[in-house]
Amino acid sequence: MAQPAQELLSERDINVELNVENITGASGQNAATTVLNQPADGHTIFANTNVIAPSIAQGTDAFTLDDWAGIARMQYDTTWIFGSGRQGTGFGDIQELVDTAQSEAISFGISGGLDSAAFPVQFAQEAGFLNNLEIVAYDDAGRMENDVITGEIDCAYGELVELEGLVEEGEIELLYVGYDETVEGYEDVPNVEDTGWDAQFGTQRGLVVLNDTPQEAIDFWAELVQDVLETDAYQEFESANYLDIREGYLSGPEYMDSLQEMVTLFEETLSAYNP
Image (tube, rainbow, N blue to C red; front, side):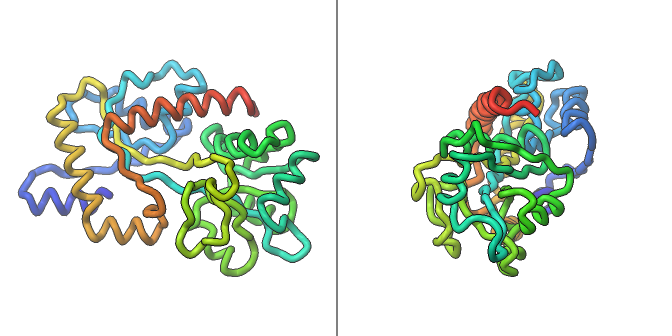
């Protein structure tokens, strides 16, 4: 997003240089804290990818939602459950997985922490097998995928851009998509409407600034984001990464409302699953 944004600024003769700094550690809290320690002048933006809401849900005292103001949400990933595609391994379909899970433990792989646990907990609650859900956490998504393929664990989830190669090779089978409409090209994969299980959690990516940032600065960035989303370069990126399956954009205030809903979801996830 930074590159098309910089190009738009240059075309408009706006002398603003965008510098992207990758601050690692503490599941994104180091980056959030760095932004919080800057002046609230609109010159420092936090690119939030499931950092703020899970941190608050886990009781961090570093910040609250009131410390932030939304610019926009740009992306909302679509989540896919997958099992092994190898003959004699895995499940025939999502109903077989759920039927099995209602009578015995099911191992469900995740790659990450609390934010990664939200979807399997949400799905297990909807499908009625939360008591038999066993979450297996991985540091390496590739190893998780391999363990699904070989039958070491029963299933896992991911985004289509990461999985399509394994699907084409027949190594994994897509069992469920967390979306309420049929996905073009994947009409045979059951969705929310098909199953009645409303599990749609996916990674959201948005931009926020400090809450005391002047409104004119917030409006400037919000307008720029909307313009970037309309560029050919961004839309090609969006399509190539299947980010256009569902609407990603939310206005700043709508994004803050969504973050509040996510805090609640993560709190519910913690009460149901506490590794």
